[in-house]
Amino acid sequence: MLVLTRLLIISNRLSQYARFSTCLMNVVELFYFLGFIGSALAGGWLLGRHFGTLGGCIGAGLGLICWGGFVWGINLLVNKLDKLYPGRPTCRRGKCNAKDYAFRGLKDGCVQLQCRCGDNYISSANRFMAVDEAGIVHPFMTRKHMFAHWQKDDSTQRS
Image 1 (tube, helix red, strand yellow):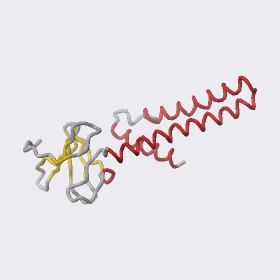
Image 2 (cartoon, helix red, strand yellow):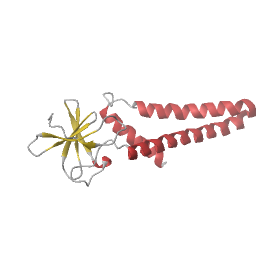
Image 3 (cartoon, one colour):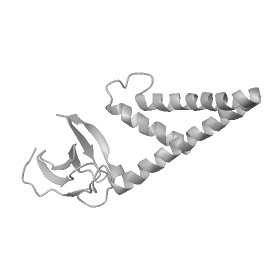
Image 4 (spheres, helix red, strand yellow):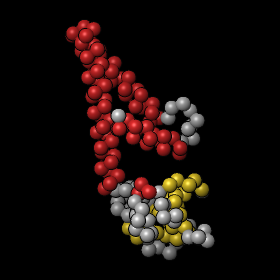
């Protein structure tokens, strides 16, 4: 149940960034729904062929258990990758981790974030920039690709 709740929270967060968020269901929720129904139908059909109605009911239950195991495994993999390669660096003060940032909006194709400390940041691709109180953007952290670790951005280029 906890895994399902977490997946729904993640899909709701993803739907905030999607243009079609006014729909009744986003793409991630549709994937989970179709997998849920498909696993029950496949399990019921496979065991129902050989063991009749009772086999079909048991097969549907086993199909749902297999789907739950698959979703649990995906969730475990995503959590491990998130810990190894966080999507956001630790804040300037060293107090906030990747999950401590709050979404503040989109501007010019960049995501505006704020950490728990109150510092503002702009994230663009593999670059993370700090915004001071005057609104001036300063280089903060960068990485070469999605699975690289964050490193200090020593460039003088301001965006």
